[in-house]
Length: 488
Image 1: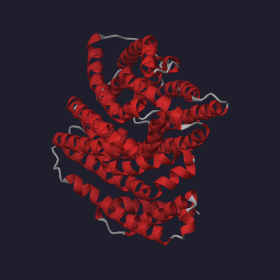
Image 2 (image 1 turned 120 degrees about the horizontal axis):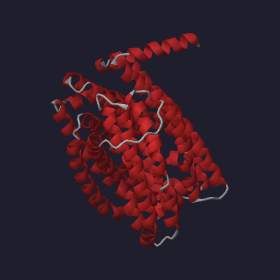
Image 3 (image 1 turned 180 degrees about the vertical axis):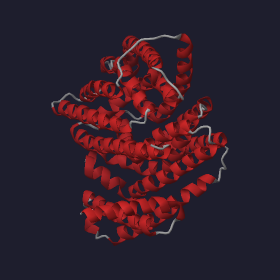
Image 4 (image 1 turned 60 degrees about the vertical axis):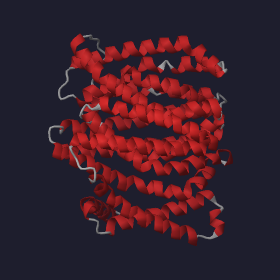
């Protein structure tokens, strides 16, 4: 299979996995939101600020070192497993000892027990991370997708069962701990891997050095996303954290299942083709163009359906989450450019430069959030939009410098999506204005009508507008649709 075919196949399976997991998370989230109050989610998110940071230190970055390496041996994976297991055990010990201190800082004793139970996952992670790195390196995304979805279904079903029986915040914790019991044996069988130990110092230093930069970068990116919850937990309280997170998670869904899917495949493809800058430039800008075409309509639609979607699905107690959902729509172009630029820097081992970007962005984010707190969760959302723009500009500058590309190439890549979504926005405005007022009062029916209308408008525009940059993609979809119609 050619590199191009592997990229398309890998991206398809990653998209299916991401979209499937997002849809399932969305569905399970609706059920859990009906069973649990915003304060419960806010309580867990407060603790996850600490465990989330540690999860990146636990060794995911070292796995990335072997994913991008040109050649690997079994000994390399034994070294990876040994390093991650040692680090995981150290992290658990640190959390076990410091849990009472964190609980005292929040004046919430239950936090100590929550942290100690949640930290058990760090001991399990190396058993899943290593075979996952093997599968990602071999671009076996189909198997990873199936396992990921199975794990999500099992753990989420358990979480709902615990919540239904009154476990409160512990339902979310216990449900999360079930996932490794699905992923570990499944990944190990698919990768034909079994645990092994090795500490060859020279190779261990190489893996750890690259992994350190990946981990530092991941931690900074994570902190950018979680610093809002950390600051709000001390100022606005857990209910505000829960409401804001609900809006933020909904806003991140299209980015999560489309852009993140392409990121993983693009990273591996760029690592393979890193000696051919022309091909790398093409892969980078083509990825931006197609992701923009496929994901932007979801964000355009949210400008109309944010509030009725939240109220209709989660109930009146969650309606305040619609405000950050609406505002974060404007961060979408920045998220796209930021994430795919990150794939370039990771593939070309420019992570030390990305770290500088993330440090500055984290500082800017904190300052903007502190200013935005005066306006509640809406102000926090606008703070995140501005900081996302800052990061995207900086990251894109580094990516184009690395690839020796022209800065204006981004505009050419985004023109097809801009044309299609301008038509979509105009069409939705007309549909919204012509709908009977009674329909506006039925939230989910309104969402359904607007969604169907938007889908038809966008599909017809995509298939029949003569946009040269999309000709190949358009023809591919026409062939598929004709084939489906013939079979029907």
